[in-house]
Each structure stands twice: as structure tokens, then as C-alpha cells.
Image 1: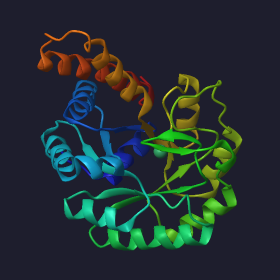
Image 2: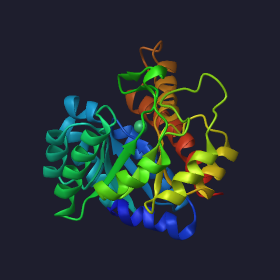
Image 3: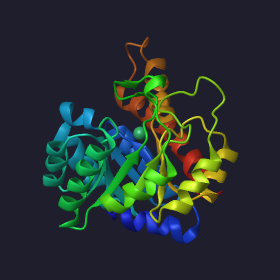
Length: 277
Ligand SMILES: [Zn+2]
């Protein structure tokens, strides 16, 4: 069933677990995430990157919303990392009610103004807004943030930011990165703990691909309720599809089914970790 991100995170909060939020780019990705969440009977979030709006746009949004409605578990649809109000307006007109307002490229004051405006618009119909403070290094959906531009979330500023924007959830930068961790991941749990004590909204951790299980559990204990996962699922899709590239007689439906299985294995493993199973 189509649910609001607010309700899904509320379930996670009540149960002391976290929910997985998975980037989807096509039908197969949506099927894989929903299949896993139904098998595990766990709520889930499907998220769409703005880059997809430029290519398959409204069709992907409509498909994702329709499949979320048919799901047997609470499922929400979310727009990931969006820096532009017009893109947010566009997905809202298509029926999407959950967005990440990404003002991380702006100055602090501009980020507050941008996010506050998004919240104001979304509130009029009960929409959900995730904000971000700090800046993640790494590569995602064609955007690379070099290490020297990365910024960890400042706990005092986080309290002020949440207060002034009235966001529903805060994405934090505590050493997590987008894409592949080249070295052993190092999360600043002291910082995460201080942020947790400084704000009252649920926390979100992007870049959950490649984090060891103990870090996931510790982050959940410290208030993370939504993990964003992209790289590991994308890699599963790419590897499964490229394994069939040399075979010119391969049935495409079969190849897509293989890719769904492959992505679903990753999703199942992640949502089990996020739920403490
Ligand atoms: Zn992200």
C-alpha cells in the first residue's frame, strides 16, 4: 500500500529500527525492492533521482507510485537530492508527496531559505521533507563532490537548521560518503550522538552501501531511521546485465528476471540489517 514517508519512519521509530530507502531507475529496480520488502514484511521507501526525471520522468514516477499502491507492505515514494523547486513542483503535480530538499551547495542562510520554502509548499498537503546539513563527498547520479568540498554536520547548526526550516528528517554527514568506500569507512559516532541530542527529528544516513553491520546497528542506536542505498543495488544490476552481454541469443525477459533476483538479494540483506534481523 502507498504510505507516507512520515508514517513509515514513524513505524521505524516505534520499533527502534531503520527503514531502507532504495534508488530505483527502472521497472526491474522497483520490482526488486518491492519483492524483498514484501517477503520480509518490512516497510520500504523507493526513491527517484532528479537525473531520472530528465530521461524517463513522469513514466517512472507513475510506475513507482502504482507499484507502491499494489504492494502488501507500507511503501512510500520519495524524490532524492533535489536542489530545484521547479523539479519538486513537477513531481508533486504527478502525485509524489516526499522529497529531499538539497540545499547543501548553498550558503547556510540560503540553504535555510530554500528548505523552508520547500517545507512551506509541501506542508499544505501534508508532504514530507528531508533536509541535509553538511556536504557528502563521493559520486552519485553523475554528480561528484570532491573531498575538499565535503563538510561534516555541525550539531549546533543542526539544531538551528531544524528549528528554522521545520523539516521532517535530517540527513547528516558524519563521515559517510556516496558511492564506494575506497578505505575502511569511518563514521564519527560521537558527532552523530551529539546531533541526536541536539535535534528532535529522525536522522537519515546516505551512503549506506559498504557500511559494516556493526556500524549500521550503532547508527540505528543513535537515531538513524532511514538509510539511503544506491551503489550496491546499482552494482548488482550492472553486473547481472553485463554477464549476459556476450550472449546474442539470450532472452531479454530472462535477463531482466536475473537482474531483479540479483538486486533483490542486496535489498533483502540490507533491510534485514536495518531491522536488526
Ligand atoms: Zn544521498
